[in-house]
View 1 (cartoon, rainbow, N blue to C red):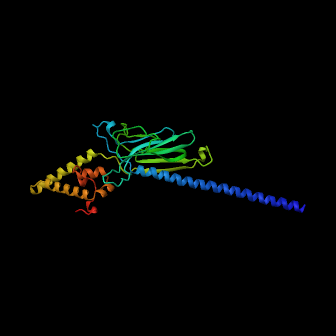
View 2: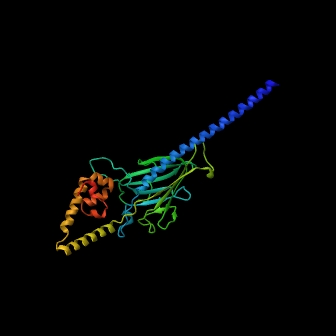
View 3: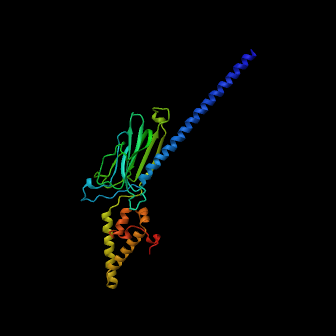
Length: 302
């Protein structure tokens, strides 16, 4: 009886220890999986945020055909509930290649959510350096050579957009009359990853990862900026004529020439700070340096 009792108690203790160990191992595996998911989701969100922070848009002149205006910010939904799952926009986050020719930091970026089985999703990132030739509202296919698989086994992905009136919108189209030549103030990104070994989770148990990013670059109206610059030049010329009877043409030309020489001498830095478009405008004298906010003294120029 004593031996049987000892065997029973030993078996009971071993059973409890094994159950505790298995439960601990399972909890540890779930915790490791959640950490892996968090790291993966953070990397995906960081990639999207970097592109969105450089989102740029030029205001479309009234006389320009919308289909010939290449600047765009589009977002629509095919799968997501309560947000967009496809987005395409112009960004300045592209790092120019180091070549003998001057290249732009502008690029057209698109994110597309696709599914094969209707349960899990894949997120693709598509990139085309430079500006498109014209407005294109279609989204690239995932089998395009410029598409890259950014994340797989997603259970959810959606984007929302904060407009000027403070309302959250589920889609965006900068070509429409209501949102013409506009980009959101804030974009909210939400995604969820499926755990390994699971095919479907209860929506209440899905760990969502959310990030909100403010778009610092507002739409740029080049026609308005040029008009303001011309008015400022005329005003300065008139003030100079009234003061000493001589025009400001020579001084303005000298300042323009000096700015162009400085930009040409510091071309790489100009590309990095303001981009090829503005550098070229300053270089050919069509954009006055005082309208750009550039401090030439920081580049070593007088």
